[in-house]
Length: 310
Image 1 (tube, helix red, strand yellow):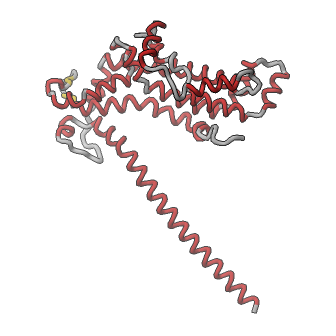
Image 2 (cartoon, one colour; image 1 turned 135 degrees about the horizontal axis):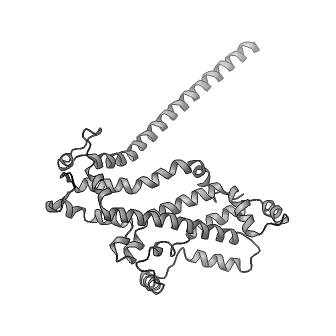
C-alpha cells in the first residue's frame, strides 16, 4: 500500500513541477518578448537618426521613411568635415573633454580620499558645506561677474575650472573609500608610504571600477558641455561642439523654410537641413558611444558603488 501511494505522490510532484516549469517558461517568454519590444522601441529612434543622416535630399523632402536604406548620400558628412567652424568646435570639445576629465578626476579622487578619513577635525562642517552646494548656488549674474574678474571670459578654462568637481560624484567616491579595509592603508603606512603613495599605489588599483565609472560620467558631462560655452564665449571660434549643435537645432525651422539657406558643397549637391541636423547628432554622439565598450567591464561593477554599505 505504501509503494503505490509513494509512486502516486512522486507522479503528482513531477506533474506539479512540470506545470510550474511550464508557467515559468511562459513567463520568461513573455518577459523577454516585452523587453525585446521595449529595446526595439528605444533603438529605432537612433536607427532612424542614422538612416536620415545618410538619406538623400529627395527622400528627406518627400518625408519618405525607409526601414532599410536604399540610397546613401554622404553630402551632409562631407559638409560637416569640410566646414572649418565644425572642426574648430570639435577641437574645443575634445580639449574640454580630455583636460576637464583629468582635472575632474584629480580633484574628486584626492578630495574624496581626504574626506573619507573619519578623524579629520571639522569634518562634519566641511561635509555640510559641500552638501550645501547641491541645493543652493550664487546665481547667474554673480557667476558671470566672478568668471570675468578671474579673466575666464573667452577662455577655454571656463568650461573646466568652475566645474572641476561634482558634489554628487565626490560623495560616491567618499562612500567607496570608506568601504575599503583599513588594513590596506595601515600596512602601507607601516612600510613607510605617505598619503599620496597610499592613494595612487594602493587605493586606486583597488578602486578601478569606481574610477572608470566616475571618469565615464565626467567625460560625458564635459563632452556635452554647452551652457558655459554659450554664457562666456563671445568668440564663435571658441564655441564647443554642443553649442554649435544647439545652434543648428534652434535654427532648424528657419533652414527648412528658407530655401536660399540650403547648403551647397563642393560637388554641387544640396544638403537638406534635416540631413545636416541628423549628421551633426551622429557625429557628436559617436565618440562617447565608442568609450563604452572599453569601460563596460568596470561600469557594470561601478554602478553599484555606494548603494550597499559594507
